[in-house]
Image 1 (cartoon, rainbow, N blue to C red):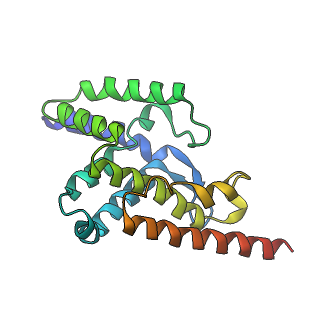
Image 2 (image 1 turned 30 degrees about the vertical axis):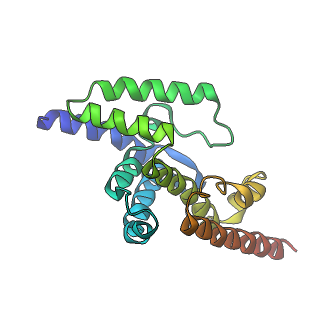
Length: 195
């Protein structure tokens, strides 16, 4: 890959810094997709040794790669919250992403296409771990954001979302339970403030 091509790839990826998500930070600032991608990548890094005990065959570097690139399609479509995203939205994002990936130099294009296919199939341990981190990070961020920024449906969603995604892992299931405790405490604290 030459230097100009490398820079062009980074220029596309930079869009995620300005692509906002539905959630806010703990200080109420709207979060960017890049920030979300960074933190799920950090989750993969921090849990590398912990999850190796449960999944010794897992390639945690591959999980981190998935986390880093998982939302690049949003460079082209923006972020649509899970509870609003339609199949049509998903197809548009996937189509635009695939078109872009095909323009990348080899072997990068093939490597990224293989990662996206694996992530989409959700059959490997690595793909399941990435997806769990993706969903759990969103819940963690909601718990960190001011409750007055929550949409009405998020009170219930934060109680139920992603339990099905973590059932393959005892450690992540226990983490989801801890996140639920934080959610319930946040909702209770919010109710007390409005009384």
